[in-house]
Amino acid sequence: MPHRTENAEGYIPNVLLAGSEEGLQLTLDDVVVVFACSENFVPYLSVALESLLENTSAERRYDIVVLTRDISPSSMLTLSRQCNRENIGIGFLDVEAAIGNRKLPHYGHFRLETYFRLLAPSLLPSVKKAVYLDSDLVVLDDIAKLWDTDVEGELLGATRDADTIGQIDGYDQGVGPYLANDLGLTDPHKYFQAGVLVMNLEEFRRRTTPEELLGIATQRVWRWLDQDVLNKVADGDYTRIDMRWNYLYDWCGLRRNSIVAQAPQDFRDEYEAARQNPGIVHYAGPDDRPWLYPECDLAEYFWDYASRCPYLGTLRTRLEESHTKPLEVAERTKTALALHVGMPLFDKAFPPKTERRMNTIGAYMRMGGSLG
Image (cartoon, rainbow, N blue to C red):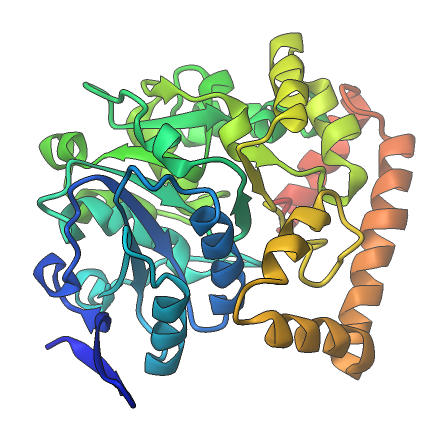
């Protein structure tokens, strides 16, 4: 049964945790956007929503579906009020039954919610196409332009992953063999980034099932989890979208000049062009993200939209606590030492594209280390 939330004015139709598409009470007849989110991540989702809302067109209808298992009724109500516009709808879809008893592996900064996008084709059986967005991003252009991408005959549209390609071509030479031998990709250089997708849900339903996708996910702990699953299934056969729709910010000041710098020239050119005119800025990384590091690359976009979202107070409190609570201060210190001291020293001692770098990383991985 849907979980409906009531306020002083009565029931808010869109604020519900529906168990099926029918319970969403959305038209789903134009631009459909899918997020996956936990209760803890709601403040960051709210910023992503604010950015999306401020860049919509009055000529289009936008329905937002949030896949979740634990967002609270009060948070659903807050997000619904945030999206309270004539041409905008939002609904919350419960994924608990679809996951069942499966133990989906995740580690580090990854969370269970990362797998929810694999369920979108079955959870939205009447929807032909949807844009999937991670919640750690801001939208700077009308998302309808991305939704309009022609993905006929393909499972999805996505951007090539300049970060991963930079790792393949020198920053971490173990990535190429992993993608080719473990993941089974015909051409690892066609690996895509899955934080922004145009999903052809009809084609997914024709070619595969959620059971098959989740079955692959549970075969082992893939380095990039469900992103690897989607790449394995597509194997380079997808509609290529310009990187401006998924611009990966310069994580820790390393991504742009140390990692992507190792990629082929066409990747570097596309990445730099996207930086000049981003449609989406994606804060993809395990740390150094704008809500805790407001000095990080392109954080100004995040905090601009945050200033107009209902969770600004929460975001400010979390930022302040990260500088005052002992455990969080210790974590910040550890991260700063590792990223701003350890990694630059490692890059200097073991330069990219050298044999000693490859051997050192290989030995670290064999001892159980992780670079994911």
